[in-house]
Length: 174
Image (tube, rainbow, N blue to C red; front, side):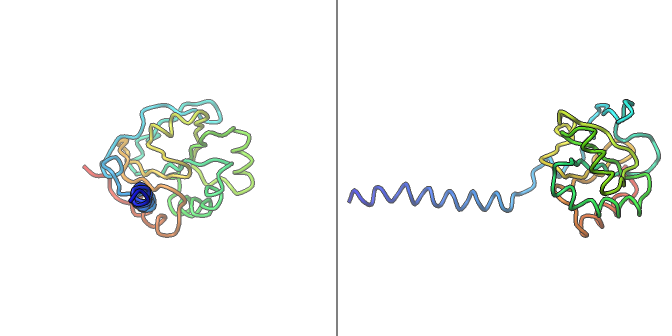
């Protein structure tokens, strides 16, 4: 009878592990990801030392903001998709160098090409946290009014590029 008592906690732990793994593999989106929210109101610093806020100016169109880092392998892999977006939507794709040095970021962009209209620096990562970043790379589409319209977590692919492109050419919600 005592052997059965030892199996009960092990079985419960196994069931818990299966449920937890299922949640990690396919998490449900919470209200944070679903609701329209404001872009952070902080001023990022550009490489020239100038302040940059998002949206950067009332140009009348939506913009994409991609958070990336030179040390991030998925950032390098998605770079061709960022370049594709930048070519299709000139002056609408911005980059934020997340928890990285300017020198490393410049070397990264010199090697792969610089598709960004402008780059901002986030050396301590606080700006990324205020965006709602869960880990680089991530891309946000922001309206001229400063509302985050879309949030793509992780490395871009052809499907997400199409989704971002549709958001970039869409009229902002009223």
